[in-house]
Length: 150
Image (cartoon, rainbow, N blue to C red; front, side, top):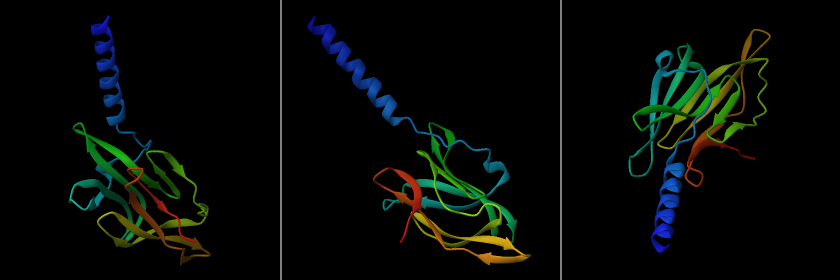
């Protein structure tokens, strides 16, 4: 009886470990084959957090982004920006971006653990700039997300 208890405990611990190490994926139609590698995000120990790829509209304007990470020899999307929709491994983030007039993004800054973006809107044939958006690595939840500032 004691052996069965030890065996069951061992199996439960192993199953728990394998489930907790499984990487959640972001659902996306973007593929890195169609995008340009822009940057590698790293933590303080220079361990890769993810690679940033972007879809170029023109010289320095991008319509979409994807951050991917290699997990078990597979490239896994962990954060996407598809037009005006932001999504991490926990789901879509609710940002009030007017998708009707959306044109693209300029990259303001790339850092070790994040990036600053400037959304662009085409209104009456003029490109206007929106409020900056910061996407950062959140160590607590171990995911990229949008930093909401007041």
